[in-house]
Length: 154
Image 1 (cartoon, one colour):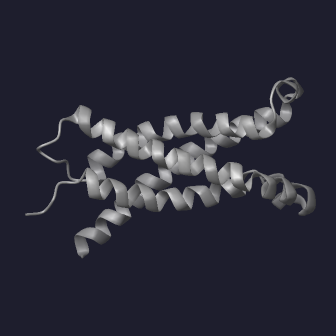
Image 2 (tube, rainbow, N blue to C red):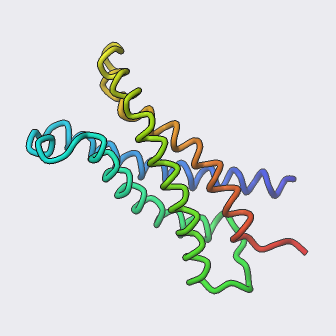
């Protein structure tokens, strides 16, 4: 049990850093969209948020793979690094799908908050769906990676 708790803590640290990378890049893209009228004439906000999600995810998942396999999970001897990376990416892409579905599904709610909430709450309303999606995907990531990538104890 102690090992599992230590592993969850390490996963949490790696996850917090990856989340900061993900949300930071996402926020930068959203701020660029809000500040650039030309972008607003090219695509709708929902599509831009989807693109921002994919880009921020790609950068953070690369960091997450390297850190997770170095510090969190005990590598399996019977799995090549290429196979390990492929499985990690497949699981992460499923997580991305969950992430995008939640963000797209809650986009209207975020826009409602932006129009109806006061000040600072409204200013960062676009981040609320992202936070909810991140929490859901966090659970998916830990459980799916532990089940498929970690060395099984004898």
